[in-house]
Length: 136
Image 1: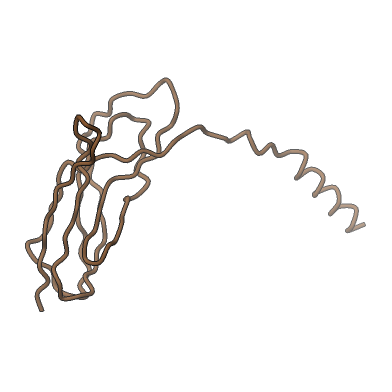
Image 2 (image 1 turned 30 degrees about the horizontal axis):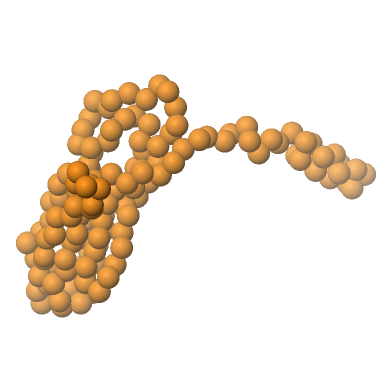
């Protein structure tokens, strides 16, 4: 009898689910950093919450996280969003939006933050660089 109930549950589970019912069309998009509130110095092995501000172009843009690339002591940063592909997107009321990046300096060398500011008229990436020293 238990095997029959298990078989019935399995059949209803697989026939009652359509994997495409909840499918939402979206794509990922990087947004430029408008500004950041960075400290003038870091202390090694301390954890910092770094606020980055960006403009959310529409209500269909949702914060996904940070584009974050490490290269030695240089950190390249942009805002990564998922964008719903819908026709009812509106301009949000609250702009700019703040996102917090947790950062822990692990060396005694200065860190360079390269914040992506978008593209220029030639299509080249534009960055703002800020160097922050690490103190003992």
